[in-house]
Image (cartoon, rainbow, N blue to C red; front, side, top):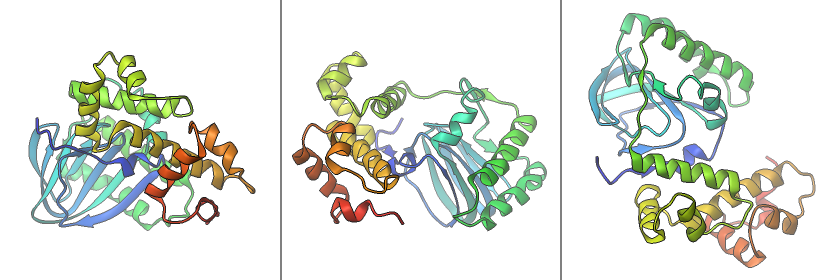
Length: 264
């Protein structure tokens, strides 16, 4: 397996649904904790999903299981719908996709075309449309795919599985004191080896990533309050000092917290 795999943190920063169109766009090998589906509208895409190589053509689909490593290249041109199901929604399918998944290459064009109207409908929805409406279309799409295509065993490389377990652990424990020593111990690794492993796949050192998660959750909490108390939020979200908070905050925002906290 290639070692220059990129972790797409921006997909994991949201637990909602992302739907958009793209064209002629090449991606490096990457992974995230979201289910991703692509419907090829026109042209063709050369794909690698968990080391399986294939060419997806017009009216064919690509399915990427959570944590699946995938890479896309235009062959030579394409346009497609991209559906990324954030963690809150993909967890609805956790029981279904715990040990099995759909094939990466969904190539029955006639059947896929029967689902095209649902993708078209998602494309017409505005950003402010009800999440329940979006979820309804997604349930129909995935339910239909599961009825038509035979599932296969889900697999992930051991190293990526460990990294994803570590990311999930951080999500669950970010309000607590966390360190390289404590997390590497939880997973039974030498801290120097675990640090190199984390950097290789995430592209960020462990402490910076932990503080990114804390900042993300702190900002989310602040935006839900009318008069957020900064010092309370800082310590509730696992920071050990205001100095550490401000140093971390400045890496992600060029505005003061009071400006960032304003509700859009």
